[in-house]
View 1 (cartoon, rainbow, N blue to C red):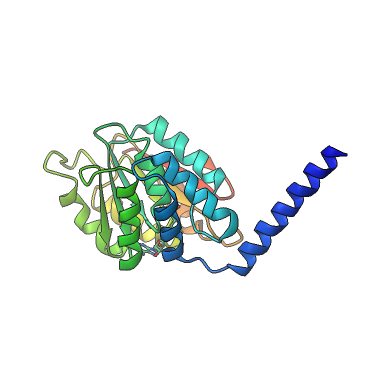
View 2: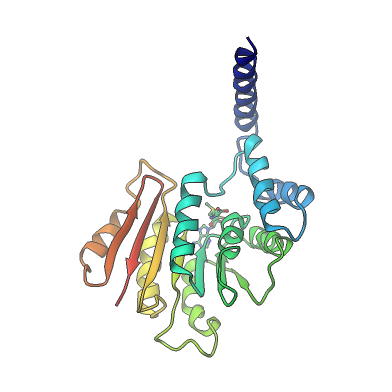
Length: 237
Ligand SMILES: C[S@@+](CC[C@H](N)C(=O)[O-])C[C@H]1O[C@@H](n2cnc3c(N)ncnc32)[C@H](O)[C@@H]1O
């Protein structure tokens, strides 16, 4: 009988959470930020991530989901990147997730088109305990950001350097033009760069252009992981 009660209670909780998400269906950056800012323990990165999760139980969010998180964490642990580029900061959930796994000298540049969102995202990164020496938020479109990146990588980063990891979760229409621009500007580390492409529109054929491009360049590209919600490609020149 008590097992039944637990099952019924769990089902009720799930139904309530589902109904709440449905009624609060629109993603709201300000509300996500306010919830996380108010309820997390400042300076504690795990608390920030847990508070995002708590918010997602009852509200719609654009934060990467569990399957993508696993792929991202695994990629960061494997690559141990010193320079990471993220396109699409949003509320900085994935920025914080990335930053917490970077080696001490690692640095993240994250790009967000919307100025209000960029400010709120930056605040969440600071609240998580990261310093400006570890990250930079650029408030502009990815297309505007890419030509500026070389100068931001620092004086020690010649053309032999570049990003070791790129996370694209902004506008799928921009994935191919941005990848081409990163190649053109020699911003993908020639000794190896993992590019994670998030697929938000799983039914759509968003990644066809990228796939065609990398299939024509097998000497530098390979597909490392292909899941429904994320693809990791590897670049080496
Ligand atoms: C799906 S959200 C990113 C979610 C984030 N990865 C996370 O897990 O928290 C996409 C973000 O990309 C931004 N964006 C869309 N197009 C962009 C572009 N061309 N350049 C830069 N940012 C863009 C949007 O404003 C939005 O905040």
